[in-house]
Length: 81
Image (cartoon, rainbow, N blue to C red):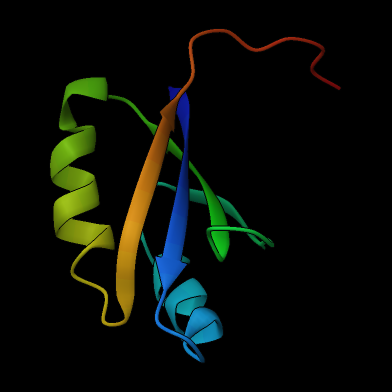
């Protein structure tokens, strides 16, 4: 399993609604509200890195009030506790 992080920009006033819907995604691990250019930071675990594009299109971009996403792929984890 590989962790991926997705930053999500929502329409104003809809961050909590989007966060609740993202939490329903099967590969969801954690979600945080953040400040700056994006509103949410979501951590997902995927088995097939080649399926990330479809996951984002099918599961994230289909959620109402999602305006934009930025995806970060991970390669190696350090310092697990």
